[in-house]
Length: 101
Image (tube, rainbow, N blue to C red; front, side, top):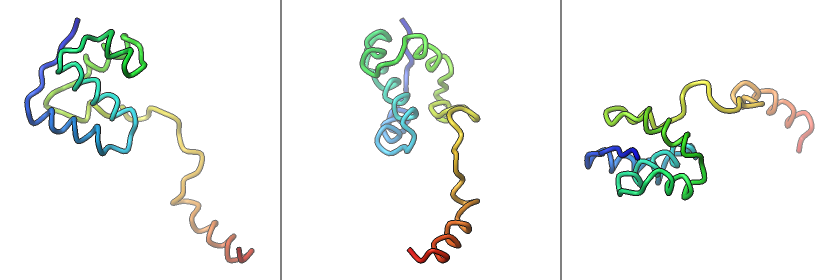
């Protein structure tokens, strides 16, 4: 059984992440920390958010109250984009002008 203790400002920051963050995994992690703060045990949290207990323990080990960046994904994780819009915006504009859609 693992519990993390959160101060009031961290709880507010995590609630903001749950409500407004663009990244799904960050919202899920923040929610897991908030559930744990409420006294819900790891096995129950794992069932609620549908992930393994091992993953939750890794999140909790990595969590740092002083640095909310630990709620977000590590750099380099996840699928890389197939298309970089910034790089291809010009070619898209040229194609649209050429074919006059």
